[in-house]
Length: 215
Ligand code: ADP
Ligand code: ADP
Ligand code: ZN
Image (cartoon, rainbow, N blue to C red; front, side):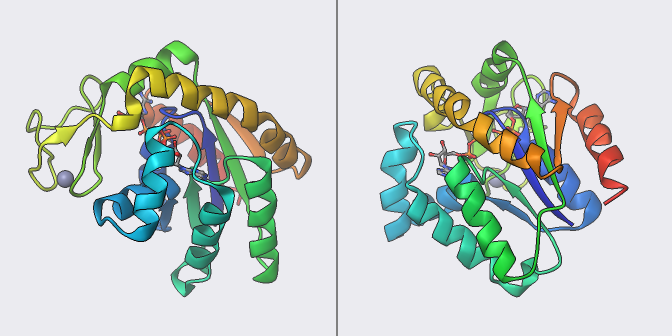
């Protein structure tokens, strides 16, 4: 099963990705997680990506597309994957198709998680993440059992630098400018499913599952 999750920053893509990937036993590919891991390791890619991410911009397409290509060409992704955070513009969507065509593969289903702006802002304001292991929490909706420490590794939880409100507003603007062409593209292919995202994470997950049984 090959799935793409679309949605604004903070819409809940990572949260749903985790639930879907666990349930269907498919690998999760998050470009944001890949970049954060590279930043943590201070690799050349991480150093380059950091300035774009921290200013609320997208990392340039050539860098991002080559990471996805390299990732998808590994054989553990041959039988299925879930893409979270890619594609983010129509150029990336078309490149993704080209990468898959070469492998005689195609996307089964694209979910657009649709969340209103005030809820997005509330989700991002309360989002906390573990810089060590990447686990994600919300101070109100998904708190760590250990308060400000990670349940997985015990590290202190942080507010992502790019989750500051002024940067979030820029990220949302970029999202709003680029999402429509992607949506039209996948609609035309008949694989787009919009999901109401102003709901409990579990209910959103059940709704998504109901569209995956047929795949
Ligand atoms: P969110 O989950 O809040 O939408 P992500 O973790 O997906 O954020 O992404 C964080 C940042 O990483 C983005 O703001 C962007 O700078 C960069 N990034 C992630 N995916 C892509 C992509 N497909 N193309 C370009 N930049 C990306
Ligand atoms: P994205 O990957 O789209 O940026 P996340 O999955 O990181 O979004 O979710 C953003 C924040 O909102 C996180 O702190 C997460 O715990 C919380 N969250 C995700 N889905 C829901 C939901 N359905 N209801 C309430 N909070 C949610
Ligand atoms: Zn951790």
